[in-house]
Length: 468
Image (cartoon, rainbow, N blue to C red; front, side, top):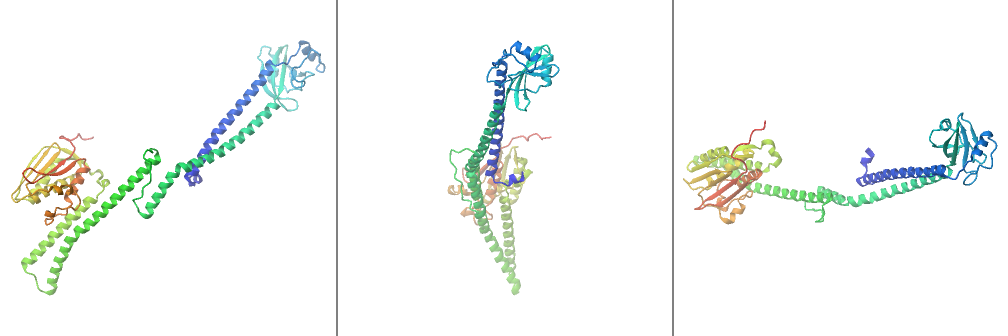
Protein backbone atom coordinates (compact mmCIF):
# COMPACT_ATOMS: atom_id res chain seq x y z
CA UNK A 1 0.00 0.00 0.00
CA UNK A 2 2.81 2.41 0.85
CA UNK A 3 4.51 1.63 -2.46
CA UNK A 4 1.26 2.32 -4.29
CA UNK A 5 0.91 5.68 -2.56
CA UNK A 6 4.47 6.59 -3.51
CA UNK A 7 3.69 6.17 -7.23
CA UNK A 8 2.73 9.19 -9.37
CA UNK A 9 -0.98 9.88 -9.65
CA UNK A 10 -1.13 8.92 -13.32
CA UNK A 11 0.51 5.56 -12.56
CA UNK A 12 -1.96 4.91 -9.78
CA UNK A 13 -4.86 5.75 -12.08
CA UNK A 14 -3.50 3.43 -14.76
CA UNK A 15 -3.12 0.62 -12.21
CA UNK A 16 -6.63 1.18 -10.91
CA UNK A 17 -8.06 1.11 -14.42
CA UNK A 18 -6.10 -2.04 -15.25
CA UNK A 19 -7.23 -3.69 -12.01
CA UNK A 20 -10.86 -2.79 -12.65
CA UNK A 21 -10.70 -4.08 -16.21
CA UNK A 22 -8.91 -7.24 -15.06
CA UNK A 23 -11.64 -7.91 -12.52
CA UNK A 24 -14.37 -7.29 -15.09
CA UNK A 25 -12.66 -9.42 -17.77
CA UNK A 26 -12.03 -12.22 -15.28
CA UNK A 27 -15.66 -12.18 -14.18
CA UNK A 28 -16.91 -12.20 -17.79
CA UNK A 29 -14.43 -14.94 -18.80
CA UNK A 30 -15.34 -17.23 -15.91
CA UNK A 31 -19.04 -16.66 -16.51
CA UNK A 32 -18.61 -17.33 -20.23
CA UNK A 33 -16.66 -20.53 -19.56
CA UNK A 34 -19.29 -21.90 -17.20
CA UNK A 35 -22.11 -20.97 -19.58
CA UNK A 36 -20.41 -22.74 -22.47
CA UNK A 37 -19.70 -25.74 -20.25
CA UNK A 38 -23.32 -25.90 -19.15
CA UNK A 39 -24.54 -25.60 -22.75
CA UNK A 40 -22.25 -28.39 -23.97
CA UNK A 41 -23.25 -30.66 -21.11
CA UNK A 42 -26.91 -29.96 -21.84
CA UNK A 43 -26.35 -31.02 -25.44
CA UNK A 44 -24.73 -34.28 -24.25
CA UNK A 45 -27.63 -34.87 -21.86
CA UNK A 46 -30.13 -34.32 -24.68
CA UNK A 47 -28.20 -36.73 -26.83
CA UNK A 48 -28.23 -39.31 -24.06
CA UNK A 49 -31.94 -38.86 -23.40
CA UNK A 50 -33.22 -38.46 -26.95
CA UNK A 51 -30.36 -39.87 -29.04
CA UNK A 52 -30.35 -42.79 -31.44
CA UNK A 53 -29.07 -45.39 -28.97
CA UNK A 54 -31.51 -48.31 -29.02
CA UNK A 55 -31.31 -51.40 -26.84
CA UNK A 56 -33.69 -54.31 -27.44
CA UNK A 57 -35.31 -56.30 -24.67
CA UNK A 58 -33.84 -59.61 -25.92
CA UNK A 59 -30.43 -57.98 -25.89
CA UNK A 60 -30.95 -56.89 -22.29
CA UNK A 61 -32.03 -60.44 -21.35
CA UNK A 62 -29.12 -61.93 -23.19
CA UNK A 63 -26.70 -59.58 -21.48
CA UNK A 64 -28.15 -60.44 -18.11
CA UNK A 65 -27.95 -64.14 -18.88
CA UNK A 66 -24.38 -63.95 -20.01
CA UNK A 67 -22.24 -60.88 -19.67
CA UNK A 68 -19.96 -62.27 -22.39
CA UNK A 69 -22.58 -62.84 -25.12
CA UNK A 70 -24.80 -60.46 -27.09
CA UNK A 71 -27.49 -60.88 -29.73
CA UNK A 72 -27.90 -59.19 -33.09
CA UNK A 73 -30.88 -57.27 -31.68
CA UNK A 74 -28.53 -54.77 -29.99
CA UNK A 75 -28.09 -51.99 -32.50
CA UNK A 76 -25.93 -49.00 -31.44
CA UNK A 77 -26.75 -45.59 -32.83
CA UNK A 78 -23.92 -43.38 -34.00
CA UNK A 79 -20.39 -44.57 -34.69
CA UNK A 80 -19.64 -47.97 -33.22
CA UNK A 81 -17.70 -48.04 -29.97
CA UNK A 82 -18.57 -44.39 -29.14
CA UNK A 83 -21.34 -45.04 -26.58
CA UNK A 84 -20.97 -46.91 -23.32
CA UNK A 85 -23.74 -49.44 -22.67
CA UNK A 86 -24.02 -51.57 -19.59
CA UNK A 87 -26.50 -52.93 -17.08
CA UNK A 88 -26.07 -52.12 -13.39
CA UNK A 89 -27.54 -54.52 -10.84
CA UNK A 90 -28.75 -53.64 -7.37
CA UNK A 91 -25.86 -55.50 -5.82
CA UNK A 92 -23.35 -53.21 -7.58
CA UNK A 93 -22.26 -55.59 -10.30
CA UNK A 94 -22.51 -54.58 -13.92
CA UNK A 95 -22.78 -56.27 -17.31
CA UNK A 96 -21.25 -54.51 -20.31
CA UNK A 97 -22.80 -54.81 -23.74
CA UNK A 98 -20.53 -56.34 -26.34
CA UNK A 99 -20.75 -53.36 -28.68
CA UNK A 100 -20.12 -50.87 -25.79
CA UNK A 101 -17.19 -48.51 -26.06
CA UNK A 102 -16.08 -49.73 -22.67
CA UNK A 103 -17.05 -50.03 -19.05
CA UNK A 104 -18.12 -47.15 -16.81
CA UNK A 105 -17.35 -47.18 -13.13
CA UNK A 106 -20.66 -47.62 -11.33
CA UNK A 107 -21.50 -45.51 -8.30
CA UNK A 108 -23.88 -45.79 -5.38
CA UNK A 109 -26.27 -43.54 -7.27
CA UNK A 110 -26.47 -46.10 -10.07
CA UNK A 111 -27.25 -48.95 -7.66
CA UNK A 112 -29.90 -46.74 -6.00
CA UNK A 113 -31.62 -46.35 -9.38
CA UNK A 114 -31.43 -50.16 -9.92
CA UNK A 115 -32.96 -50.81 -6.51
CA UNK A 116 -35.80 -48.32 -6.96
CA UNK A 117 -37.68 -48.81 -10.25
CA UNK A 118 -39.77 -45.68 -9.52
CA UNK A 119 -36.78 -43.36 -9.31
CA UNK A 120 -36.11 -40.69 -11.92
CA UNK A 121 -33.40 -40.90 -14.49
CA UNK A 122 -30.06 -39.65 -13.23
CA UNK A 123 -27.36 -37.72 -15.07
CA UNK A 124 -23.84 -37.59 -13.75
CA UNK A 125 -20.25 -37.04 -14.79
CA UNK A 126 -17.96 -39.98 -14.15
CA UNK A 127 -15.08 -42.01 -15.51
CA UNK A 128 -14.72 -45.17 -17.53
CA UNK A 129 -12.48 -48.05 -16.54
CA UNK A 130 -9.48 -46.25 -18.05
CA UNK A 131 -10.14 -43.04 -16.09
CA UNK A 132 -11.44 -41.06 -19.08
CA UNK A 133 -14.28 -38.60 -18.35
CA UNK A 134 -17.78 -39.59 -19.46
CA UNK A 135 -21.29 -38.22 -19.13
CA UNK A 136 -23.65 -40.96 -17.97
CA UNK A 137 -27.43 -41.45 -17.90
CA UNK A 138 -28.89 -44.12 -15.59
CA UNK A 139 -32.43 -45.45 -16.34
CA UNK A 140 -34.40 -47.78 -14.01
CA UNK A 141 -35.55 -50.98 -15.78
CA UNK A 142 -37.12 -52.74 -12.81
CA UNK A 143 -36.24 -56.05 -11.33
CA UNK A 144 -33.19 -54.63 -9.62
CA UNK A 145 -31.55 -53.59 -12.90
CA UNK A 146 -30.70 -50.18 -14.36
CA UNK A 147 -29.47 -49.27 -17.83
CA UNK A 148 -26.43 -47.04 -17.94
CA UNK A 149 -25.71 -45.13 -21.15
CA UNK A 150 -22.64 -42.87 -21.32
CA UNK A 151 -20.81 -40.75 -23.89
CA UNK A 152 -17.18 -39.68 -23.75
CA UNK A 153 -16.37 -36.06 -22.75
CA UNK A 154 -12.93 -35.88 -24.31
CA UNK A 155 -14.00 -33.62 -27.17
CA UNK A 156 -15.94 -31.37 -24.81
CA UNK A 157 -13.02 -31.19 -22.37
CA UNK A 158 -10.69 -30.31 -25.23
CA UNK A 159 -13.10 -27.59 -26.36
CA UNK A 160 -13.36 -26.17 -22.83
CA UNK A 161 -9.58 -26.23 -22.42
CA UNK A 162 -9.14 -24.37 -25.70
CA UNK A 163 -11.81 -21.88 -24.66
CA UNK A 164 -10.10 -21.32 -21.28
CA UNK A 165 -6.77 -20.69 -23.01
CA UNK A 166 -8.39 -18.32 -25.47
CA UNK A 167 -10.18 -16.41 -22.71
CA UNK A 168 -6.94 -16.24 -20.72
CA UNK A 169 -5.07 -14.77 -23.70
CA UNK A 170 -7.88 -12.31 -24.41
CA UNK A 171 -7.99 -11.32 -20.74
CA UNK A 172 -4.25 -10.67 -20.68
CA UNK A 173 -4.44 -8.59 -23.84
CA UNK A 174 -7.44 -6.71 -22.44
CA UNK A 175 -5.68 -5.94 -19.16
CA UNK A 176 -2.53 -4.75 -20.94
CA UNK A 177 -4.61 -2.65 -23.31
CA UNK A 178 -6.63 -1.24 -20.42
CA UNK A 179 -3.45 -0.35 -18.56
CA UNK A 180 -2.03 1.43 -21.61
CA UNK A 181 -5.34 3.19 -22.26
CA UNK A 182 -5.63 4.14 -18.58
CA UNK A 183 -2.13 5.60 -18.64
CA UNK A 184 -2.92 7.58 -21.79
CA UNK A 185 -6.23 8.82 -20.36
CA UNK A 186 -4.54 9.71 -17.06
CA UNK A 187 -1.86 11.68 -18.88
CA UNK A 188 -4.41 13.52 -20.98
CA UNK A 189 -6.73 14.13 -18.04
CA UNK A 190 -3.97 15.27 -15.68
CA UNK A 191 -2.28 17.56 -18.19
CA UNK A 192 -4.20 20.59 -16.80
CA UNK A 193 -3.16 19.50 -13.30
CA UNK A 194 0.46 19.43 -14.47
CA UNK A 195 0.07 22.97 -15.78
CA UNK A 196 -1.49 24.02 -12.51
CA UNK A 197 1.33 22.38 -10.56
CA UNK A 198 3.96 24.11 -12.70
CA UNK A 199 2.22 27.44 -12.18
CA UNK A 200 2.02 26.95 -8.42
CA UNK A 201 5.70 26.00 -8.29
CA UNK A 202 6.55 29.05 -10.39
CA UNK A 203 4.59 31.32 -8.04
CA UNK A 204 6.23 29.73 -4.99
CA UNK A 205 9.68 30.12 -6.56
CA UNK A 206 9.36 33.63 -8.01
CA UNK A 207 6.44 35.13 -5.98
CA UNK A 208 5.04 36.28 -9.32
CA UNK A 209 1.30 36.60 -8.66
CA UNK A 210 0.53 37.88 -12.16
CA UNK A 211 0.69 34.37 -13.66
CA UNK A 212 -2.66 33.02 -14.81
CA UNK A 213 -3.76 29.56 -15.93
CA UNK A 214 -5.63 29.63 -19.26
CA UNK A 215 -9.17 28.29 -18.89
CA UNK A 216 -11.77 27.83 -21.58
CA UNK A 217 -14.81 30.01 -20.96
CA UNK A 218 -17.35 27.21 -21.47
CA UNK A 219 -15.41 24.60 -19.46
CA UNK A 220 -17.24 23.53 -16.30
CA UNK A 221 -15.30 20.45 -15.17
CA UNK A 222 -13.41 20.12 -11.89
CA UNK A 223 -10.07 21.09 -13.44
CA UNK A 224 -11.55 24.25 -14.92
CA UNK A 225 -13.13 25.15 -11.57
CA UNK A 226 -9.82 24.51 -9.82
CA UNK A 227 -7.98 26.69 -12.35
CA UNK A 228 -10.49 29.51 -11.97
CA UNK A 229 -10.22 29.26 -8.19
CA UNK A 230 -6.44 29.43 -8.41
CA UNK A 231 -6.62 32.46 -10.71
CA UNK A 232 -9.04 34.14 -8.31
CA UNK A 233 -6.75 33.32 -5.39
CA UNK A 234 -3.66 34.77 -7.08
CA UNK A 235 -5.64 37.86 -8.09
CA UNK A 236 -6.78 38.33 -4.49
CA UNK A 237 -3.26 37.74 -3.18
CA UNK A 238 -1.83 40.22 -5.68
CA UNK A 239 -4.41 42.79 -4.65
CA UNK A 240 -3.73 42.12 -0.98
CA UNK A 241 0.00 42.48 -1.50
CA UNK A 242 -0.51 45.72 -3.40
CA UNK A 243 -2.70 47.04 -0.60
CA UNK A 244 -0.13 45.96 1.95
CA UNK A 245 2.68 47.69 0.09
CA UNK A 246 0.52 50.78 -0.32
CA UNK A 247 -0.35 50.70 3.39
CA UNK A 248 3.32 50.44 4.33
CA UNK A 249 4.25 53.27 1.99
CA UNK A 250 1.41 55.49 3.21
CA UNK A 251 2.14 54.65 6.85
CA UNK A 252 5.81 55.51 6.35
CA UNK A 253 4.84 58.79 4.78
CA UNK A 254 2.42 59.65 7.57
CA UNK A 255 4.86 58.61 10.29
CA UNK A 256 7.65 60.68 8.81
CA UNK A 257 6.02 64.04 9.63
CA UNK A 258 5.36 63.54 13.37
CA UNK A 259 8.68 61.73 13.82
CA UNK A 260 10.55 64.58 12.14
CA UNK A 261 8.76 67.09 14.31
CA UNK A 262 9.48 65.03 17.43
CA UNK A 263 13.14 64.70 16.55
CA UNK A 264 13.44 68.44 15.90
CA UNK A 265 11.78 69.40 19.17
CA UNK A 266 13.77 66.84 21.18
CA UNK A 267 17.03 68.01 19.56
CA UNK A 268 16.21 71.60 20.54
CA UNK A 269 15.55 70.55 24.12
CA UNK A 270 18.72 68.41 24.21
CA UNK A 271 20.90 71.14 22.73
CA UNK A 272 19.53 73.58 25.28
CA UNK A 273 20.51 71.22 28.10
CA UNK A 274 23.94 70.44 26.62
CA UNK A 275 24.90 74.06 25.98
CA UNK A 276 23.68 75.24 29.34
CA UNK A 277 21.50 77.89 27.73
CA UNK A 278 17.99 77.09 28.82
CA UNK A 279 15.12 78.01 26.57
CA UNK A 280 12.62 80.60 27.67
CA UNK A 281 9.97 78.99 29.78
CA UNK A 282 7.20 79.82 27.29
CA UNK A 283 9.18 78.25 24.41
CA UNK A 284 10.02 75.23 26.52
CA UNK A 285 6.37 74.67 27.41
CA UNK A 286 5.42 75.06 23.74
CA UNK A 287 8.03 72.48 22.71
CA UNK A 288 6.84 70.02 25.36
CA UNK A 289 3.23 70.56 24.31
CA UNK A 290 4.23 69.95 20.69
CA UNK A 291 6.07 66.76 21.69
CA UNK A 292 3.03 65.58 23.62
CA UNK A 293 0.74 66.35 20.70
CA UNK A 294 3.00 64.55 18.26
CA UNK A 295 3.17 61.50 20.55
CA UNK A 296 -0.60 61.51 20.85
CA UNK A 297 -0.88 61.69 17.07
CA UNK A 298 1.61 58.81 16.73
CA UNK A 299 -0.34 56.70 19.24
CA UNK A 300 -3.58 57.37 17.35
CA UNK A 301 -1.93 56.53 14.04
CA UNK A 302 -0.49 53.28 15.40
CA UNK A 303 -3.88 52.34 16.82
CA UNK A 304 -5.53 53.01 13.47
CA UNK A 305 -2.90 50.93 11.68
CA UNK A 306 -3.45 48.06 14.10
CA UNK A 307 -7.18 48.22 13.48
CA UNK A 308 -6.72 48.19 9.72
CA UNK A 309 -4.22 45.33 9.86
CA UNK A 310 -6.66 42.96 11.57
CA UNK A 311 -8.00 40.27 9.26
CA UNK A 312 -11.55 38.94 9.18
CA UNK A 313 -10.48 35.77 10.97
CA UNK A 314 -9.17 37.78 13.95
CA UNK A 315 -12.67 38.90 14.83
CA UNK A 316 -13.36 35.40 16.18
CA UNK A 317 -16.27 35.13 18.55
CA UNK A 318 -16.15 38.81 19.56
CA UNK A 319 -19.04 39.53 17.21
CA UNK A 320 -22.24 39.70 19.23
CA UNK A 321 -25.60 41.41 19.41
CA UNK A 322 -24.97 45.08 20.25
CA UNK A 323 -27.36 47.87 21.09
CA UNK A 324 -26.55 50.55 18.54
CA UNK A 325 -28.46 53.08 20.67
CA UNK A 326 -26.18 52.47 23.66
CA UNK A 327 -23.09 52.56 21.44
CA UNK A 328 -24.08 55.94 19.98
CA UNK A 329 -24.79 57.35 23.46
CA UNK A 330 -21.32 56.27 24.65
CA UNK A 331 -19.74 57.87 21.59
CA UNK A 332 -21.76 61.05 22.15
CA UNK A 333 -20.34 61.41 25.66
CA UNK A 334 -16.82 61.30 24.28
CA UNK A 335 -17.68 63.72 21.46
CA UNK A 336 -19.15 66.28 23.90
CA UNK A 337 -15.90 66.19 25.89
CA UNK A 338 -13.86 66.87 22.75
CA UNK A 339 -16.07 69.73 21.66
CA UNK A 340 -17.46 71.31 24.85
CA UNK A 341 -18.35 74.53 23.06
CA UNK A 342 -20.52 72.69 20.51
CA UNK A 343 -24.19 71.83 20.80
CA UNK A 344 -24.87 68.15 20.14
CA UNK A 345 -28.49 67.07 19.79
CA UNK A 346 -29.53 63.45 19.55
CA UNK A 347 -32.74 61.58 18.76
CA UNK A 348 -32.15 57.86 19.19
CA UNK A 349 -34.45 54.89 18.89
CA UNK A 350 -33.60 51.29 19.86
CA UNK A 351 -31.76 49.18 17.29
CA UNK A 352 -29.78 45.97 17.73
CA UNK A 353 -27.08 44.78 15.34
CA UNK A 354 -24.50 42.00 15.14
CA UNK A 355 -21.05 43.58 15.37
CA UNK A 356 -17.90 43.78 17.43
CA UNK A 357 -18.74 46.23 20.23
CA UNK A 358 -15.35 47.99 20.46
CA UNK A 359 -14.96 48.33 16.69
CA UNK A 360 -18.52 49.61 16.29
CA UNK A 361 -18.04 52.24 19.01
CA UNK A 362 -14.74 53.32 17.46
CA UNK A 363 -16.46 53.75 14.07
CA UNK A 364 -19.21 55.92 15.56
CA UNK A 365 -16.64 57.92 17.52
CA UNK A 366 -14.67 58.56 14.31
CA UNK A 367 -17.77 59.88 12.56
CA UNK A 368 -18.57 62.18 15.49
CA UNK A 369 -14.91 63.30 15.73
CA UNK A 370 -15.05 64.27 12.09
CA UNK A 371 -18.16 66.35 12.77
CA UNK A 372 -16.51 67.97 15.84
CA UNK A 373 -13.31 68.70 13.91
CA UNK A 374 -15.04 70.51 11.05
CA UNK A 375 -17.82 72.24 12.99
CA UNK A 376 -17.47 76.02 13.43
CA UNK A 377 -17.11 77.44 16.97
CA UNK A 378 -20.36 77.21 18.90
CA UNK A 379 -21.81 75.14 16.07
CA UNK A 380 -24.42 72.41 16.24
CA UNK A 381 -24.15 68.71 15.49
CA UNK A 382 -27.39 66.85 14.88
CA UNK A 383 -27.48 63.08 15.49
CA UNK A 384 -30.40 60.76 14.80
CA UNK A 385 -30.88 56.98 14.84
CA UNK A 386 -34.00 55.63 13.16
CA UNK A 387 -34.59 52.04 11.98
CA UNK A 388 -30.91 51.24 11.88
CA UNK A 389 -29.85 54.41 10.04
CA UNK A 390 -27.50 56.73 11.95
CA UNK A 391 -27.23 60.29 10.59
CA UNK A 392 -24.63 62.77 11.81
CA UNK A 393 -24.97 66.27 10.38
CA UNK A 394 -22.53 69.11 11.00
CA UNK A 395 -22.60 72.76 9.85
CA UNK A 396 -18.99 72.99 8.75
CA UNK A 397 -17.55 73.97 5.37
CA UNK A 398 -18.65 70.69 3.75
CA UNK A 399 -16.74 68.47 1.36
CA UNK A 400 -16.19 69.44 -2.28
CA UNK A 401 -17.94 67.14 -4.75
CA UNK A 402 -14.65 66.09 -6.38
CA UNK A 403 -13.30 64.89 -3.02
CA UNK A 404 -16.30 62.77 -1.98
CA UNK A 405 -15.15 59.61 -3.87
CA UNK A 406 -11.87 59.60 -1.89
CA UNK A 407 -13.02 60.28 1.66
CA UNK A 408 -12.97 56.56 2.63
CA UNK A 409 -9.53 55.87 1.13
CA UNK A 410 -6.69 55.07 3.50
CA UNK A 411 -4.50 58.06 4.46
CA UNK A 412 -6.49 60.36 2.20
CA UNK A 413 -6.94 63.83 3.64
CA UNK A 414 -8.57 66.84 2.12
CA UNK A 415 -6.06 69.56 1.21
CA UNK A 416 -8.01 71.95 3.41
CA UNK A 417 -7.76 69.59 6.41
CA UNK A 418 -4.09 68.63 6.31
CA UNK A 419 -3.23 71.22 8.90
CA UNK A 420 -5.66 69.62 11.34
CA UNK A 421 -4.73 66.66 13.53
CA UNK A 422 -5.53 63.22 12.20
CA UNK A 423 -4.06 60.30 10.31
CA UNK A 424 -6.46 60.05 7.39
CA UNK A 425 -7.54 56.58 8.55
CA UNK A 426 -10.65 57.38 10.59
CA UNK A 427 -13.23 57.15 7.80
CA UNK A 428 -11.45 54.16 6.31
CA UNK A 429 -11.93 52.36 9.63
CA UNK A 430 -15.58 53.43 9.66
CA UNK A 431 -16.19 51.99 6.18
CA UNK A 432 -14.43 48.74 7.04
CA UNK A 433 -16.38 48.23 10.27
CA UNK A 434 -19.74 48.99 8.68
CA UNK A 435 -19.09 46.74 5.69
CA UNK A 436 -18.03 43.91 8.00
CA UNK A 437 -21.42 44.15 9.68
CA UNK A 438 -23.22 44.05 6.34
CA UNK A 439 -24.11 47.75 6.32
CA UNK A 440 -23.47 50.80 4.17
CA UNK A 441 -21.84 54.15 4.85
CA UNK A 442 -21.77 57.41 2.93
CA UNK A 443 -21.04 61.12 3.10
CA UNK A 444 -23.06 63.77 1.30
CA UNK A 445 -23.41 67.57 1.33
CA UNK A 446 -26.17 68.80 3.64
CA UNK A 447 -28.78 71.35 2.72
CA UNK A 448 -27.76 74.75 3.95
CA UNK A 449 -24.11 73.75 4.27
CA UNK A 450 -22.17 71.14 6.14
CA UNK A 451 -21.98 67.39 5.70
CA UNK A 452 -24.27 64.47 6.49
CA UNK A 453 -22.65 61.12 7.38
CA UNK A 454 -25.04 58.14 7.06
CA UNK A 455 -24.44 54.70 8.54
CA UNK A 456 -27.01 51.97 7.81
CA UNK A 457 -26.70 48.67 9.66
CA UNK A 458 -28.99 45.62 9.38
CA UNK A 459 -30.66 44.56 12.59
CA UNK A 460 -33.90 44.74 14.54
CA UNK A 461 -35.66 47.09 16.93
CA UNK A 462 -35.81 44.37 19.58
CA UNK A 463 -33.00 42.09 20.73
CA UNK A 464 -33.19 38.48 19.55
CA UNK A 465 -34.17 35.89 22.17
CA UNK A 466 -31.28 34.39 24.06
CA UNK A 467 -30.29 30.87 23.02
CA UNK A 468 -30.37 28.59 26.09
